[in-house]
Amino acid sequence: MVYTDFFLPLTQGKRVRRSLLLDIYRLTGLCLYPLARLLAPISPAFPGRSAYLFPERLGLYPRLSADRGPTVWLHAASMGEVQAALVLLAALREQFGQYRYVLSVTSRQGHELARARLRDLSCIMAPLDMPQAVNRAIDLIGPALYICLETELWPLLLTTLSARAVPLVLLNGRMSERSFRRYRRLAPAIAGVLRSFSRMALIGEADRRRFGALGVAAGCMQVTGNLKFDAPFDEAGAGAIRAAYRRRLGLAEEERLLLCGSTHGGEEALLIAAWQELGRKRAIPLVLALAPRHLERLAEVENLLQERGLAWQRLSALAGKRTAPVILVDTMGELADLYAAGDCLFCGGSLLPRLSGHNLMEAARWGRPVYFGPYTRDWQDAANLLAGSGGGFRVADMAALVDHVGALLRDAHAYERACRAAHDCAASQRGALARQLAVAAEFL
Image (cartoon, rainbow, N blue to C red; front, top):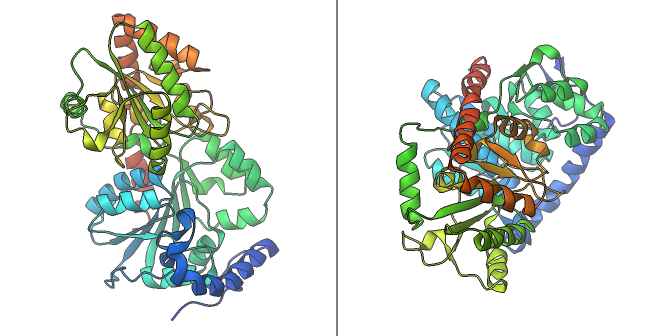
């Protein structure tokens, strides 16, 4: 039976703290859900990303296994969080194999990656934050533990799980300054939502301070480092992985690769111009690889290359036979390892004020110089660490990128120092997996 006590949830004598704002939010979702159900049959015609598996967003999961058993529900918002979830799930399943695991996501790319990598595990689209959808999902999953990765806070889902006496754990928790300012305006409503968590494993001290200022008890929080820095990495096999990817990309021994990962709209034009300028200034052949953050932008990037009169090939069609100077990465979930092939790495999402950076250590672990723009507010600690180590370089504009990459590739000793520094900096940040796994283990 669907749980329907939406307004006064009680559990084992514990009253869940509420605010008028949360009750209005709850009532709004309650009223909108019937309309959403009526629209579900025509959801494939919805514009944009909202059409993707829309019935699942309503709590309708026909593919969800009926094998209940003790279940851990893990939520990861999108691609980056799913990558971290893969690392965590491997460790959880090895240590706590008696549990069933369900992974929910909110983006299409994240869901597709999860389904591709976790074929033997239930991967679903997270329910919309409406009472009926939330309670249907909880009834079907029956979680013994809910783990949220990073900080996607759905008030109704979290407070309802807490009301049902389901332990909630936040792993790899982060709170940017921008999010903190926004949440602070919603106090005390957000404080009631955050108090739903039994424990929080946070990335850094700044995150601890911000969560504390929002009302989270000090004893609930622990700084554990960033799980995304603990992706599986075979030190002994790194050279072989690099060689294999360079063969796949059709790179000759004398060719150098400028690999630009997780790029956003407006960045590719800047990076193409910088690469062209580097080509005019250098004698060593320099190949460019562009890996857009969102694959639906591939046609847009191809149009840009065509306008510039540049030849390109998609990665999926290369098979080691490259004839063009530009490679367009059109495969999903491969960038973390593809960085191995690069000689200079640029992490996108950092060149324009509206952006906030991506995972820099994912690139640095391969021991190659890492470049990034001035806008890395979501990865500020990693950016500072890399820049301080000498393995990463913040560039204010493309002229600075051209000058620094050109100088570094001309100075073999400086290049090798930067490579070692990037590798050592990334290696020093590992260990978060074990610490965060210990937090989750308290409830298993």
